[in-house]
Length: 525
Image (tube, rainbow, N blue to C red; front, side, top):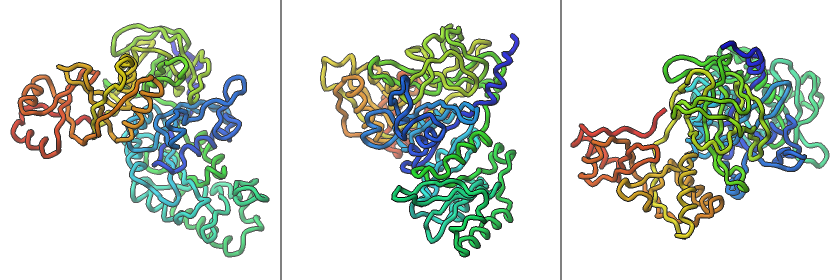
């Protein structure tokens, strides 16, 4: 089959990237400012929807809006400087790591957001390690310079010490006794001043061609800034594209997203430095090239993005070829053929008509009930991609319906949340659907599950107090011995048997006395 000549140039225009951070580093604010700068929204927080109405934000669930946190990822496509951006906004909270890790499998570049006052935090480090494992290049944005923070040189030292990447600042902040005065482009020498205009809040101002010509700087500020820039040049902290793509360096940008400072520089970096889609490795050791026939990877499933229709959306990253609405594809896991008729371009909660897509794009397939995260579809030869990350739950709680007349909605809601990865649902093979057990990486997942069961599925629900336990996968033979020893063995929807131990001590004791039993940690991928 001859390749489509439109694919390579269209793929070269794509930039598919995720924004990752610790909670409260300003990731959601930065996401909205990027959209605002690119013209994809009219006002921060209001996505431009069809017919000019105010649409969704990246945080579109009710619980996200009331709690002020991101609990699920969102896909947002927009254009900037002739390029097509596919931005994947991710949850920052550690309890939703599995959703974030899955989204990172669909990206080509990551933007790591750091709070200037707090530096690298635990969740930031964990997410960076995922990027390193996958070989995803990382651009760093140091945010909140308009607030009291740490010395920029100290932050650079911490980045290199903690994550092993050599930071190469592309912009540099001008500071005076803790006050943020602006940003200097280290290549051009241009200055983006920052301060107050009239009675307005601090904000970025019109650029100055050469920072040395900015009359508002005192001699002390001018001398110190010159020394810092000379120091960075002297130690060779300059961007090198090959080292960046090879995972040796991270270009660093500074700014204050709330005041729009540094946001334009960051947008430009995605075009100039961000990676275009490339070949994808397969589970069999081969590769899928962007010019090959269409193939796609399901990295997320989401229920009720449109509460009016109680639908289900499968998010697919295009890996190769050209997607066309209605095309017939092979579903690798089931071996079946399916038609991709109900395709949309997701933009947060909003959906736009989609007739074609290219490598790097994200497709939303409505009510494609056979698709699950990790699945591969293809128009050419069958393709199978490496398995997605899977996380070991540490918290467990029995879930019950509080209204027997709503039991059907209760079961449907549990199935949807399990499929999405909001929680894992475990059942006793002998008791079936009676009092299933919810398993979660962190306790906030339970809060989200209960809120969504009631708000989206109309299923009043209660939980027993969560318990901390240790989980391991086992096989059928091992399950019999485990049950005889009083260990709970439950069943996942996907068919795996999961053994639950009341403590690490109990697990270690069983392993010493029963070494023949298969016990595998649930963390994989």
